[in-house]
Amino acid sequence: MRAVRLGPRSVAALALVSAIGVVAFGWPLFAPGDSGITTHAADAPWLFAALLPLLLAVVVATIADTGLDAKAVAMLGVLAAAGAALRPLGAGTAGIEPMFFLMVLSGRVLGPGFGFVLGAVSMFASALLTGGVGPWMPFQMLAMGWVAMGAGLLPGAARLRGRAESLLLAGYGAVASVAYGTAMNLQGWALMQGMASGISYVPGGPLDENLARFVAYCLATSLGWDLPRAVVTMVLTLTLGGPVLRALRRATRRAAFEAPVAFEDR
Image 1 (cartoon, rainbow, N blue to C red):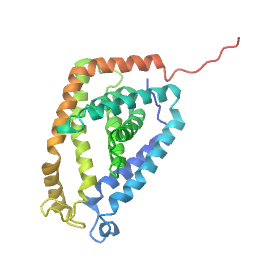
Image 2: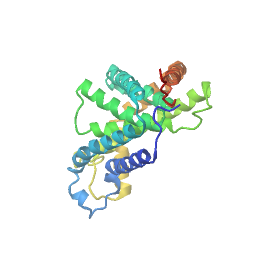
Image 3: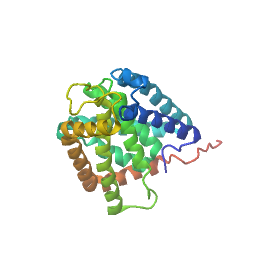
């Protein structure tokens, strides 16, 4: 059972916001030197930060319009609150972020549509809880939505169980944890123009040179957080993943999201 059955409109909205999100994250590497965006490289992240919340709102509204019923909203509220509460436990210290573990397992059980909404809403709630509201927040919401949505797209959701599924989710969680950190590095990297000649973004610079600078930037600034985050996600998935997956599937069966509503005459 899936808490959200994606229709054509929902899929189109997700594809559109994901495509724009890829541009929002990756433009520093691909914008040509004569592009107008490179002449306003310091302003571009702020522009995308203003645009992404509107797009995310459209996606959430579209998904809600096509299949987010009262039971799914209740499940979303519980899991988003749990995710928001888990994030401050490590406060990001040394990559201790147990929130990723819950987002991956929830996306796996409840599907990609629900996972995307859950990731975005959880990150929004956690930002309000921890005071982490800023221009980076829409990027975090989108990236976490991708993490949970990707878990829902993994193969074998109907049949794969037990240790094999835990290994699959642990491997995905590790890769997604590093990918999340890399994407967020792209968001902040463009703001570091000229601050350190070896790692800062050069607007309009050759792709190979800027890519080398970006790799150096990741190694110097975030790898010490990304790798521990991946390890924590793997360990939690392998140790607690089985019981949590069973609990989520039990709650999904009891909610009977896809069961038709029937009214009886009395």
